[in-house]
Image (cartoon, rainbow, N blue to C red; front, side, top):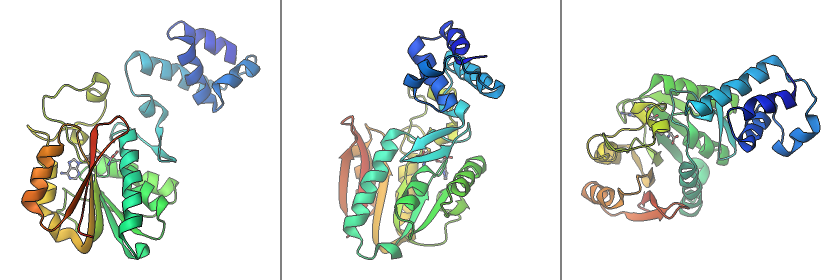
Length: 274
Ligand SMILES: C[S@@+](CC[C@H](N)C(=O)[O-])C[C@H]1O[C@@H](n2cnc3c(N)ncnc32)[C@H](O)[C@@H]1O
């Protein structure tokens, strides 16, 4: 089929703007350029991918899973149904963590980072990309998620240590930076169907109050921290006060910085002793 024929096909199902965005994504061009290539023939596998994308939109499936990739902090990451699709808010977590690392640690190349609950590896790999000289470890309980993280580490040529672990169970070293975006949704909480029906439950839910992982992590984290440390959490936007309480119950002599995301929602908590 030609580009024009595929646009006509797509318009039977979706608004023309959406059709052009999807087709341009498949053809790896700017949607504004399609007008110049209307008569060009599209390879069969690409035409089929375009039709799958339309079906995915109609079935309320995340496009990232159909495309098999997403962009995170400038990295093209492989994603599939075994990993959470990394979110924009998590890029903000990485951005703020980068700034704090740069201001708080004098000898940056000597620090060690652990990304706990790493999923696709998004956070740890983005930090490794920002600080190539730093030792980064990523860990998750889900073997299938870690397979994706390994593929990402290999395809991006970002060397990180990968550990399968139920939180700290198989973690044997100490770190200067422990960063985590753990599951934080309350069981039974209303969330979008597209998330609930497609993304892995193990990446989403965190017990009755959504705080299970913060509690478990904070109860044990002291044993895994070097003398100078930074802990960085992404949090649910209604969880700040409860998490601050858990932090104060478990850690002493610390500074806490809470930050909002660009939508003005409480989204990040940073804890340091430096
Ligand atoms: C919200 S997702 C975050 C994934 C990734 N860090 C990101 O920001 O895109 C939470 C991750 O925690 C992992 N997880 C759930 N329970 C865990 C546990 N007990 N120990 C380690 N990881 C766990 C899930 O497999 C999932 O990959």
